[in-house]
Image (cartoon, rainbow, N blue to C red; front, side):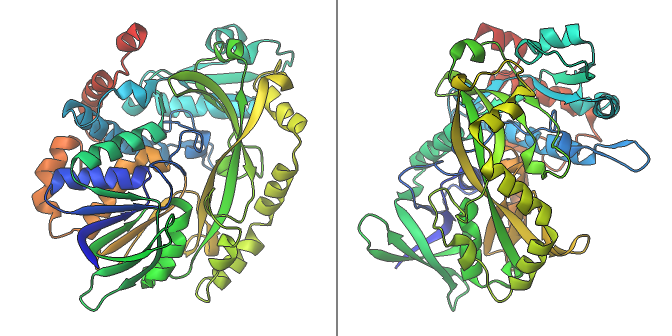
Length: 496
């Protein structure tokens, strides 16, 4: 039986972020990591398994909704943007402290754009632009419904477009492309130098409380089959889709009445480099009527393995697995006596989602190409391949607003009342807001220490505990300092 202070389950971006924060706050704590796969960042954090968008609500239309009176609610967009600023500050601290090197290996400046068609959508986008561009967080946003201007912004999208339907876009240059796989690997390499024990090829099979209130984990070496027992005072379950089963095994009351619904993603990848070079932006459209928020179509320039790529998607798929490397029985075995009614209620409520997923799974390559042609009218089938992205498990729980069996589309942290264990469930905006989410875990789980840790947290994240909306003078300062450190400012980007 081996004892440690902290156990992190899963070597993804969330565990990497929590481990890095804790190592700065309490360097002498012993941290042990268990990861089922052979290396870090291979599931949801892997660069091919997510959209790689630095989610700051600059272009994602599902973060801004139209109110009944026709005005645009940008509260959610403000929250997500502020959360992304925390991530950028922490990454800058790590770079400035020489704890990680070469930020261009994981983050690149890239314009974020929203693109809509049809009179009603153009009017919505204009109203959204007017509401957001007044806000200092979204400074520099531009709007155009002039086809000539759009040809400058989006040559590939406008080329060969014959429709007379109104079309409009917003553009903001302060967007980013983030390679969360590369960042995760960098953070774990850094943690290894800080004596964090990282055990790859180790799967956590069971988790239970001991008489002294700590947690005992049954861990299996996937290569040899041997079983070890490890105990810790604090456990973080950051195993992506695998977190729900472990949360259920922990037996904490906070984990009851929660279910999960797996959705897989597929992207089209352009293999013609000439076409890749004609596009330079992340362009988000509007989800079709009746489609869930995770299905917002986008055409993305990506930087993967130091090479410029072009991806379009996501198309939704369905598999009962909770992880790409999971089991076909994951969904069935996640149904327990305490969540069966919640799951059944969700099934009855979400008939339209089920229908949507079935339609998506049945799409042929040519039908997917037709969707792509709404963005690139001239797209040719032979230039594009299909890749399977990550599995996401959407949280299902009973809520006051939505009633029994409500499907959640965000990122959720479930913590035990005594703060000794926390689990991360859910999906987007996920990785982009990892620093905010892990600060939430630290605040909930270490209430006695948080006061004494505050000065160090503020050194790492200067705007910690401060609303940027109430201190607009800080926004420019943060943009400038993180932009310089992470190589996101225009001059630096052009030099590259």
